[in-house]
Length: 322
Image (cartoon, rainbow, N blue to C red):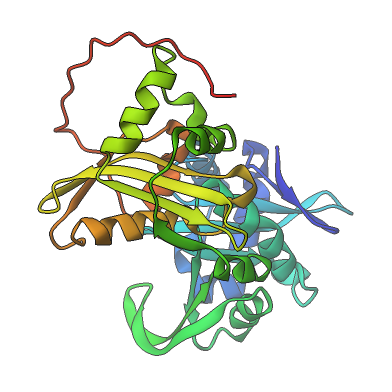
């Protein structure tokens, strides 16, 4: 299955018949030198790695690794990956076999790959870490818009060595738009909130029973009510929450207009709400996450809790606000 594509390349999911190519590509000198943990000495080693990676596509706690296929020849020339570092951070990785280097394939693969996986996992930035002497890898990141944050001694593959750390924020075309978005306290009227629900995926989270009667009560009684507004005053994001301003914040609603996703608005709303409630040193945050939103919340450093209980005997007929 194709994940992404460019003029010359396809980014695909792994299949077991790629084991021989993965084995051979991993053995080249540069991979041994800079990525020793990605060297597969036998075809069986490569096959086991492929089986693990294929079983974990979409898992926000596992590496997301995809083969890079050269369109012209239909052959595997390397891979591109996104690896979770913990605390909501992800690191880009890539390797192109030596027979195909110096042709711009790595940069092309990264440019095609990142927008897709960043959207999939709700990321607004990605890290890049490499040995300082790896000039080729540094060049790829700089061509793809990564900005160097640090250069110096750091732990890299189990030893202290000169290292470079890069960061890629959202795509430049979104950055200027972000500067025009403002977050502010806002008490929604029922009419404007229902209109907003129609433009987001939040519109299917409420039961049909007495919807128009209960929404006004929700809007009046929440203790945190935030709106994200564009430069024309249009509501493009919303967060509602309950807090005691001492220990906890429960986020009841968090949504972004479908036309404004992937611009860091959800992250900004969560950060602002946390600060209003009392800050991360005092306030624990809880919420019920839609399955599709779990990667985004995990990117914020949130984890599943096993000590939350509920009592729920309400009538609940699914419907979508339209």
